Image (tube, rainbow, N blue to C red):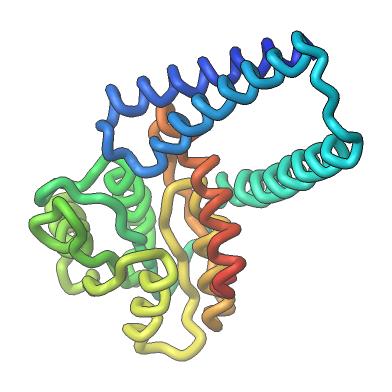
Length: 251
């Protein structure tokens, strides 16, 4: 039991250290960073509480132990399944010849694309260069801290790299992945087009599942790399995102 206490304390310290790394590297407002703060504090409190129970010989009823163990097992199993699905799609490469390339938006700081969004756009640029007949749909509205819409920032980035503006359609109203795809779908001129969705590797599984749920049958994901330092944060957050979209009926 003392080993479990020690493991909880060590895990809590690791979570708190990772929280510090995230906030120093990417800022205190980084999405989902709060999870590591809460997880770290929770692990430490649980470890100390468990240590107190063991030291003072406090007896816990068997049925409470069974409920707790079953809950931990169920949560761990669900997490492993979700992460397996996410990771299995994280290295997808799309076939050539897509009619539309949907680039999903991400944070823009003022008018400058974030690192995550830049990686998506760089992957999109390579695909568009190799497939000159493909039309790009850049999808993302204007959020907090953004002086222009994500779609406009993405179009500016791609045109600066040499992609013709005539090949880029802007969808600038969406605020999440489900809206990205639903609003972009309305811009299709062809029936049953071949579609490729560009997003960061951790996000491919959910994006493709949402697209298929919305009736886009001929769709593939194109995985762009992610920031190495924030990778664990992204993958943990994405498991929560997949679960949320499943419960909302989006996938």
